[in-house]
Image (cartoon, rainbow, N blue to C red; front, side):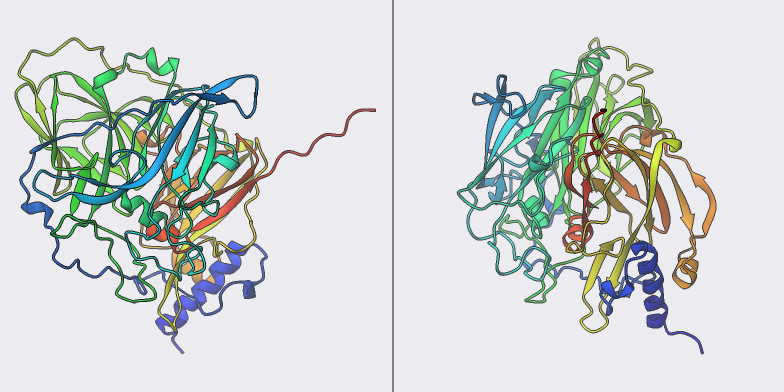
Length: 553
């Protein structure tokens, strides 16, 4: 007798769960869940905004691009690891304020780590640690509806909670911003950032369990830049020619207020993804930037909840990507289009030398993001872009002590129609199953059964992409056999550097090789589509300290 679609998907769940659990009892997994491998069943789109602001109706290029201010130390304090030494001390206060996103839009209520959105930029050097006191001075009521059915956001916990995370930082676990280590209004947390890593573009944002997507949407994020001597010696554009660009989409109503979509279900307002029609760059709609006819370095940071960007210049000219999540690439990579997932960063150099007197647009497909107004003055002297940037030694597969196969799947409860997203068929509350040993290397195979591209982020570590490979989803669902299709696909040229967030393509295996250097302790890995992470697509992992050797007699 032929199987119904529901029986087929349920059968796929059983096989996938058994594979992912690696010996865990099948009964440990929610028995009512049904795997969604074919259709987007159970997905919850947001209701339309009442009286929306249509961003496309606004005048373009009437506001200058804001450049976030640089955080200034307010003193020094003892180094937690070396009390005889002192480190720069910073104090950032989270508070509610109003910002002007466009000349013709009324002030918008938002949350910030400083005086605007994004918050101020940290400028630091490799090896020079710093201390930050993060202070919660936010209201007791959230800007947006909180879904109390989401893990960690129950009605028994405060509505407004925060915990900051520096995305990509190699930090002790107590300073990483573990989602459950949140604090409330009137409280603060003192975090230590050793900055023992190469020059790179990091960013900080909220990571509170169950409401990270709401807090970040409200405006809680900013840049954290690490510099070093190797980078400085390359002669890359610097000073006023080195500019961070936060890209994020939002929904506004006609009064200029942020609107976070909800499902229309009173007790369960969570939606599966969020896409706004207003694209902001450093907090402005359609900003312009006056540039000289010379090269500029732009540090692109995708701070959207769900949206991927397909970035290009309106005149079709190429630009060069010089860095990815965790620092410089081996060499510049010429591109005409750059795909940037939520949480990812890319450093690019755009040379305006041949565009004097013209106006160029930064676009994402049909969306216009900002305008560059190139000066008519003759090109100013600037160093040529180096052919080589920073060597990235490839990690031999043979150094891996373990290979983990980890599934990315979406499930639906046939009774309630509720949808949940799981990593390796495990809820957040399940015991930790990934326990790498400190200073060892592992290969993680991310098996994506969904139709979505999931940007997977691992805290603490940097890693390298080995390859991607298609696999037969249905064979896996029916037989539990991992049948690969075709040869593995090597990384693109701009993926050959160090990463901390990787795009796991639909119906493909994404293999990464991960050195677990840094610190022992509990961290997390998750999808950086924030709505997915909120609905269980986040799991803890624990780095275990190497056992001490017995002293010789």
